[in-house]
Amino acid sequence: MISLPAMIVFIVYGVYSIFHLVLCFFESEKLRKISKPFCMALLAVGAVLAAPNYPLIYLGPVFGLIGDILLIFKKKFRFFIYGMVAFMCNHVCYFIQILIFIGKTGVNVPWYFFLVMGIALVAIVIGLYPFTKKLAGRAALLGNLYIPLMICVGVMAAWLLTELKVTYPGLFILLGYIIFLLSDSILIYTTFKKDIRRRDLYIMFTYLMAEFLIVFGLILIEVISAWQQF
Image (cartoon, rainbow, N blue to C red; front, top):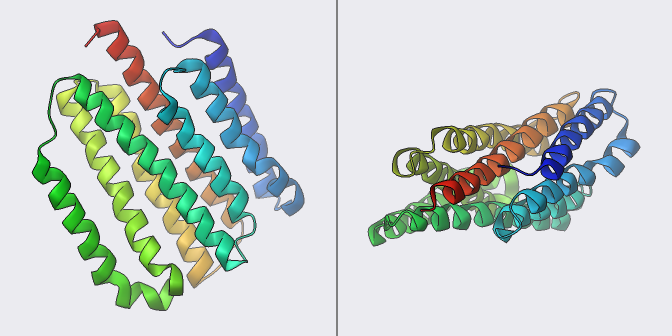
């Protein structure tokens, strides 16, 4: 079972997230920027308390925290790029952890999966560049890699549904990545195409929900795996 201290921290995360979203709604920019990093800090602490032996689960929110701080200064292009790199590291942590959980079942991920995934990533990065360059400029190549990486992790979450037979945790992770794609789509659109009122409310609502679903899903898999001792 998830420890009581971890559950308390997750509840605090939910309450604090609502507080942050209220700041986003009223467009209180100074307080919003100050409060923003503490959301992922609380999620990371909850993950540490719930799954201390699985550092990749709580390193994900830590990289998210770093990305949040860097995106506060998104008007400076280099900080936007560094923020994207931090969020890529966030998803890489989750991706590797999912592979570890799959490995514990004794199911071997076939080598051609990584080959196909690698070829698909390269094809998407290069193929979309002429189109996305007009939208994102120098950030296009990184963005072309970032979105497919998230989709790949979502595919691995779907794999968990069938191979590990952990329906609810797998659904949490899969739903988390669907919502994450929505959050990043809003971010990309409002950053490079057209700004909208209360953009941060929509971005942060979907982002905070997505991160929690992914982290909580991974923690539940760890709890179930320990219980089943596979």
